[in-house]
Length: 320
Image (cartoon, rainbow, N blue to C red; front, side, top):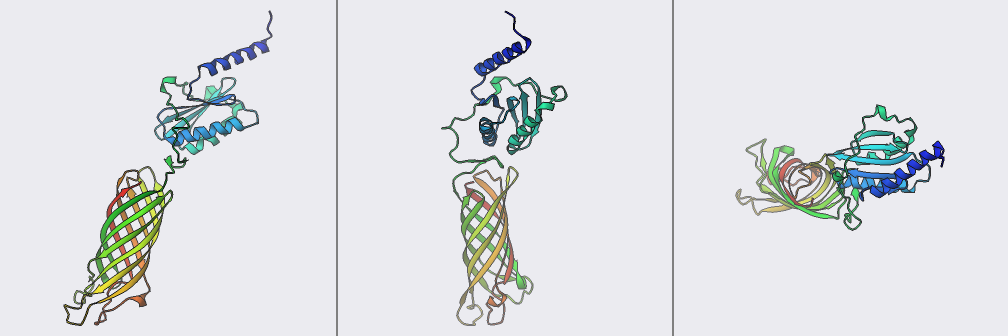
């Protein structure tokens, strides 16, 4: 029986499609006539981006020249290989999972001018190198942030201790110990802190020592900004009320006094390594209050500075 040439081509393509469907791996996503397959060791963000691409291809109604898409993951980068229905192919390097959908869309739009002879296209990987994607039951219950590759997890509790020093107006300085507990809510951290200021000294005038100390508590809130894979930046604000105590017994100047300082502040913090459960944390804090609110001793010495800068270093636990 004579079969016209165009019918033979159609027959070959039909047989090839059936063979591909029958022999294809269970890790491939079937999106209409275009299959999406993920290879290599990959973070969950790449799997999530691949699932989103598969869903987009499955729901599109306009015609496409796509026959198969390979997504190769190597470390933090990926390579997407776009195969057309007539066997041509093109590849692109991806730095981030969020680039996958836009890159595939661009390749599909330009498929009519793809020339595989001018492209450095890796050969199709062996199915033994394919990583099994998680099933619906195995996928994390929390969504994945494809910007960072991390699970947008449920709120987590962290706590820590920071020690350092505070120096401010009039040359007043004191050691500081901060203890805090906080709740991490995706991009935010909200918490409470307790502070000890064991003694103030005047580093500018040795003969004018205030003999004061402070004990305080406050609240804090900060934006959590990942800086790469290992560092987390915290940019936040705080409000602290400190009870400042003056010891007059040594001077024979009467009974001791205590007053309250209300301070508003801003701080920058660094946490690393940010994904560990025990982390190094540093804080650079600026706090101030109205100058008129500063209490003075009988000799006219300020008992605490109306503004101060503190540098603290310590350990954070929990979370991340």
